[in-house]
Image (cartoon, rainbow, N blue to C red; front, side, top):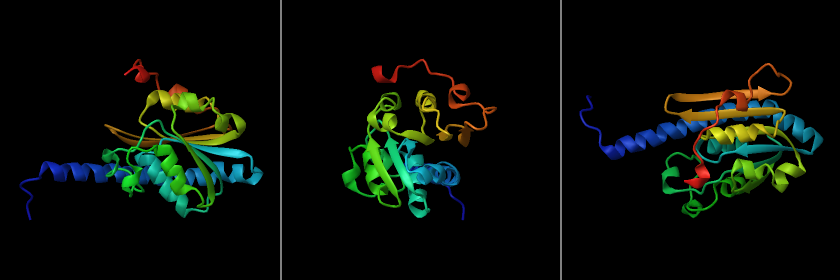
Length: 203
């Protein structure tokens, strides 16, 4: 069979599915890394906090995999946005119309809470959340970044967790990088990503 015509709607659906699959794959890798490192140490002491920044395609992939793994501990999710209809095709656990126009972080935290993890969500910019009561009250040992925002990546590094795992999807592909305090020879997020000149809050 030879495909001679692809409708625009079909192309959009294919793109959304591929984006969701990339999110799921990156989420799987990041979940396995976090399970092997951060959550194991935080749960043993009972005082550590895992932080997930971004509740979009990658954040959904992480949440789905964490719900299937034997993860234990506390996880706080941060995202500045609300779910829109464009997220229906890219976020794998977004399956209810009630999620529309509601906080991504709070909805995803509610979905994941109780699956071996105590989860909370906060709709905020990363820079604002860093000075909030959740980040200030606990020792953040693990940060999972699922972002498409360079400045947010740099801000997340300011927590200086024991382990930070960063996953991203962009026009040229997808990648997962890590930074560990016990391996200082590697570049951190602030060294790896240059700051942007656009003031997003002013847009």
